[in-house]
Structure formats: structure tokens, C-alpha cells
View 1 (cartoon, rainbow, N blue to C red):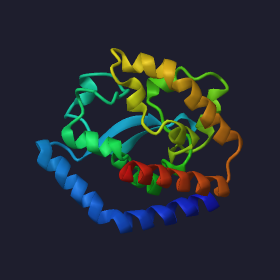
View 2 (view 1 turned 135 degrees about the vertical axis):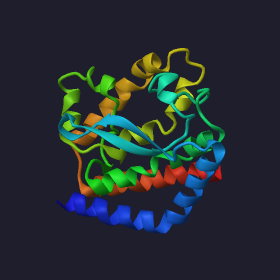
View 3 (view 1 turned 180 degrees about the vertical axis):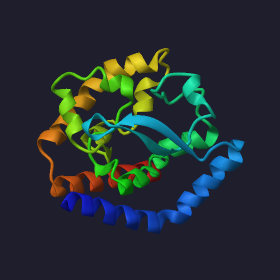
View 4 (view 1 turned 120 degrees about the vertical axis):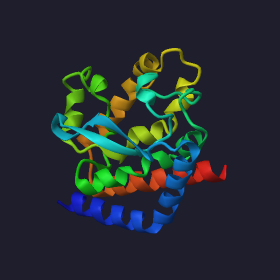
Length: 200
């Protein structure tokens, strides 16, 4: 209950403070190609329930029909504004809507696409006991997945080989040991990562 209250309060504060930025990003996306502002991909949430996750659209319209679910840094589907959004993780901010609706939490294992979850081992399925989050230990370990996948001819296959194992290990670490104090630490470290990216 405390975690849920924490999620709601912090999400409302962030949305309130950064609403001008959200509107500016939405305008840039719309002006870029006239397409939708949001991309609402299907992800698997708590207890295996599918939901549609909000993201600022960083790719061309109908990108899901032009390639896989994993995105390399040099993915041809990325728009010019999309590359900028991904660099600073701004495309992830609309997930605050999912947090407010209860589908996600600020901190928790990152939600995965259905085909990935189907490959979970029995141990990995413990991840589905918690609400997925906007950030977690795995996000801090690998802040830019696209860099690892750069140049890949099969990003989905390389994701499963180069990223998935460690990501699952860190997600399970959070599942087995989580608290509001840990959430607060992860949030602060995530903010620090973003600031380092902005000012480097």
C-alpha cells in the first residue's frame, strides 16, 4: 500500500513539474511526420496480465511491422526526434500514465513483450509477481541497450544472447529484495544517470 501511495504522489509531482516538457516533446513528434504522439506496445504485467504501455513514439509509423521488438542504436526505423528521445530516455516518461493507472510502478522489473515472457524459466516467472517498473537494477546496469545492439543483423536474437540473461538476474535480485528504501535509491541513481548523459 505504501509503495502504491509513493508511486502516485511522485508520478503526479513529476507530471506537474515537467508537463511543459511533455507538451514540447509531443509537438516535436507531431511536427516530425504528423503521426501519433504515443506508441502503445503490448507488454506483460503483474500476474502475466497484458497491458499497453505508453511511450513517446520514437520510430516511424507502423514500425512494429518493419522489424523486431528490440531496437538497436542504428535502427533504420528511428526518427530524428526519436534518436534524441532515446538518448535521454525521454520516450519512457509517458509510462507515468501506466503508473497512475496501476499497471506499472516507478520501480520494478522492466515489462517485456509477450514472446520474451513465453521463454521465461520457472525462476524468472517470479518477476511477474510484481508490478513492472519504469526503472530497476537492470536499467541502471544497461542504460542504453541500443548501443549493445548496434550493427546487429538480428537485434531480437542478440538481445536474448547479450542482454536478457543479466537483465533477468538483476530483475530477480529486485524481486527477492525490494523495499521503499531500495526504490528511492534506484530512483536517485536513475536521475543521476540521466543527468550524466545530459551534461557529458
